[in-house]
Length: 156
Image (cartoon, rainbow, N blue to C red; front, top):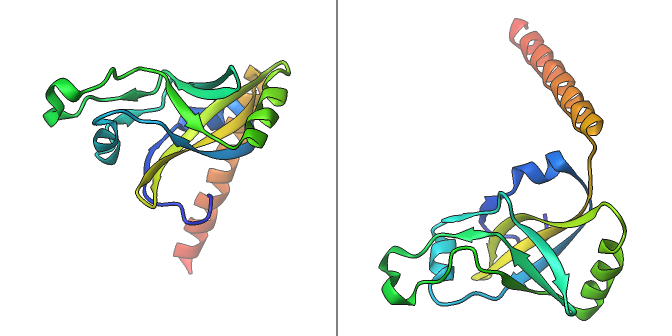
């Protein structure tokens, strides 16, 4: 977690299941109208969202932010693409890395930091089916060890 990270509003739990996350970047989001109010109410979904580099800028696509209830005509399109704010150096790194086969930019979580909405983007390499199965086996084995340890602690 980046230092000074505030309240986590949404997490993409499928990201760690589907990708090996190699690097993470913190980015600001360009929002419109009542979007920040919906974000503060945690009315957003990262499930099928992804980021893409286009024309030297990074955009977050397919992230759903629900319309604000009291927003009436000032509301926004829930699935519109949103520009991410990164340094030029970071964008050029991302351009180079996403050109490689199998790499994708995946939003991991959205949180508030000093009153601003931030998104943590991970550079992920896609997992194969056997990698996912292997991870599930490791997770299950770890759970079994913890369960056995906990049961042993109860006996004493």
